[in-house]
Image 1 (tube, rainbow, N blue to C red):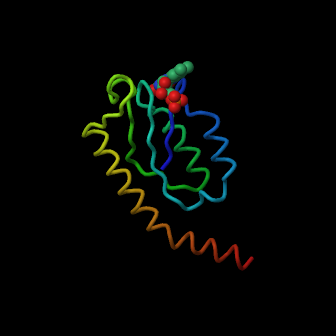
Image 2: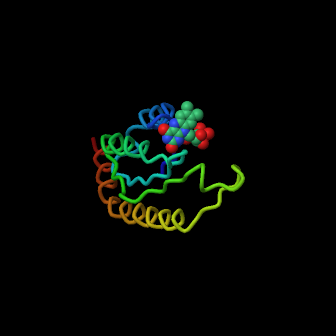
Image 3: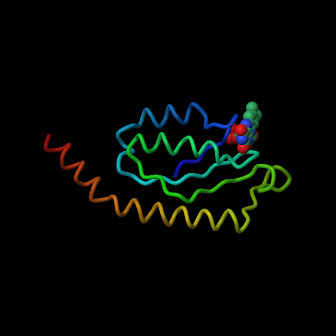
Length: 116
Ligand SMILES: Cc1cc2nc3c(=O)[nH]c(=O)nc-3n(C[C@H](O)[C@H](O)[C@H](O)COP(=O)(O)O)c2cc1C
C-alpha cells in the first residue's frame, strides 16, 4: 500500500524518488493507494498509477481517499467514516488477492535471476 498526500494536484517528489530508488523490488507486486488532502488526493493517485504501471506493478482499482477537511475531528483526530473503512477493506482485499495471484510470476523472476 502506498500512502500519499496531494500537493497542487500531484504527489510529492520524495515519493517519486523512493519509487525510482527501490525500482526492481516493485516488479510483479500489487499496489493499493491511500491518499489525503483537502480534496482527498485522488489526482495524486491518478498520477501514481501510471508510474507504478511502468515499474511493473499491478494497481488495484479501489482506493482510499481521505479528506483533511471532513474526515478529522477538530482538525486533529482521524475519524474514519463508513466510506473510508469500506474503501479500505475493498482495497486491501484486492491487493491481497492480486499479490497472491502474482506470486508464481515473482517466483519465476527470482529463479531466472538466480540462474542467470
Ligand atoms: C501548497 C499546498 C497545496 C496543496 N494542494 C492540494 C491539492 O492539490 N489537493 C489536495 O487534496 N490537497 C492539497 N493540499 C492540502 C494537503 O494535501 C494537506 O495539507 C495535507 O495534510 C498535506 O500532507 P502532509 O502534511 O502529510 O504533507 C495542499 C496544501 C498546500 C500547503
